Amino acid sequence: MTDSPRERLKAISEVRRALAWLLATWFGCGKSPQAPGTVGALAALLPVIAMVTYDVAEWRWVLIALIAVFTLPGIWAAGAHARRRGKKDPGDVVVDEVLGQWVTIAFATQLNWAGIGIAFLLFRLFDIVKPPPVRQAESLPGGLGIVADDLAAGVLAGLVFYMAGCFNLY
Image (cartoon, rainbow, N blue to C red):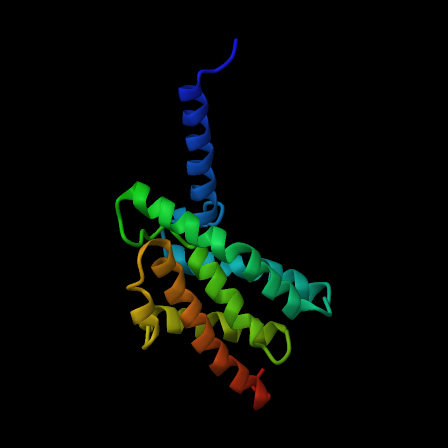
């Protein structure tokens, strides 16, 4: 027995909703009852920790590839999940924190354990304080606004992180 077109559309819609939820919440990290943004930023460190552990020589290119691969789908997922929840920027959307954390780390002068900790703290600081132009990026519509402010926070934190590296502070 074949499904009707209506049933197929409903099934496709459910798959899209599930994909949006998985990506927006970064595989459920955003459902943490305590500090979901911090949990999302910590989850972003997992591939970075693997790169340090296994001494990946091209770590920066791996990060750039991750950012490139997940930014547009992350914007889509954040926007779709926010619309479904009826909120501008739901707290359980953390794909933006993951992307922003990766952007910060991509500015590292070297990849090491101390640097990972400093990058984490700097990104969280800039993400929470939201200095200009981070706050202004938040006003962009839909998923773009959800993600853009964290990308901007990642760039600003990354610049500070890079300068710290230039002075051998990590």
